[in-house]
Image 1 (cartoon, rainbow, N blue to C red):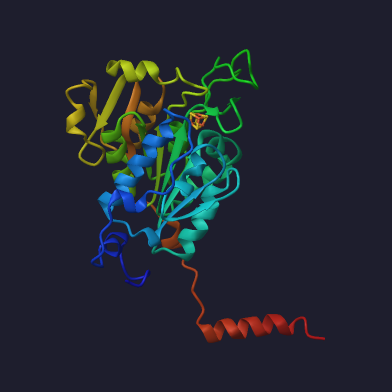
Image 2: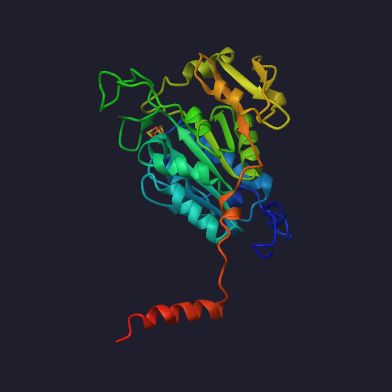
Length: 318
Ligand code: SF4
C-alpha cells in the first residue's frame, strides 16, 4: 500500500495485484421503487469502480438524507450516511484527513439545493478533489412528494397541490456562478453509456466535480423526463475531446454541439434553459486552487503535539 501523501490517486488504485469485478462492489439489493433511476445510477457507479479498479477499502461514499442517500448501504465500500444537507462538509473533512481515499458524495436535489445549499456553494469554492453526484428528480421523494427547489413551476405536489409557485432553481447555472467552480457536467440516468462516460470524466478531474444526474422518479415525477426519453431531438450532447464523447450515441442523438469546456462564458450560456436538455461537460478547469493542496497547515511532529497539549493542560492546573 502506498503512503497517501506520496502517490496520485490513479497510481494508488493500481499499485497491487488485486483486481475487482462489479460484484465485488455490490451490496444488498437496493430498496428503491421499481423503475427508479437510482438503480441505473448505482449500476453505473459499480461499473465506474470496476473500470477504475478502485480498492473498496480505499473508496468512500458519503450521503445526506433522501432516496438517493441510501447509496452507501448498497455498495461494499466504506460509507457514511449522514445528516440532511451535510454530506459535503463531512466528505471535505474526510478528504482533508485522508487524501488517499477516493471520495464520492451522493445527494438529492432537496438535500443539495435546499438545506445543503450553503455547503454546496462553499464546497464548490473550496474545490476539494472529490466527485459529487446530485441526483435530481425534482421532488422530495423520501418524504412523499414535496416541492423541492428544482421542481418545475406548476408541478403539483402534496405541499403545493396547485403547482409549484416559483421557477425551478437551476443547479448548473448556480454552480457555474460560484468562484473557483472547476467541473460542472450533466447526464441522465436513462443513458447508461453517457452516464458512465460522465462519471469517468468527473473521477479523473483534479478538483470538485459536480455532476447533475437527471433522475427518473416513477413514483412522484413520472412525466419529468418522459418526453426527453422518447424524443432524442430534445437532447443536445455537448462534445469535445476534453469533455464526454460517446460514439455509440451518435446515430440516435443527432443534436451534437462541439463545446470547449474551458470556456466558462459559453458554459453559463449553454446552461440556461432554452427548450433543449444539454448533456455533457459544461465546464472544466484543472488549474484552480484545490483546498487540501493550498491550505498549507503545517502538521506538527508528535513531540511538538505533546508539548502543545501539555501547555494547554497547564492552563487549567490548579
Ligand atoms: Fe425512487 Fe421516487 Fe421511489 Fe424515491 S420515491 S425510490 S426517487 S421512485
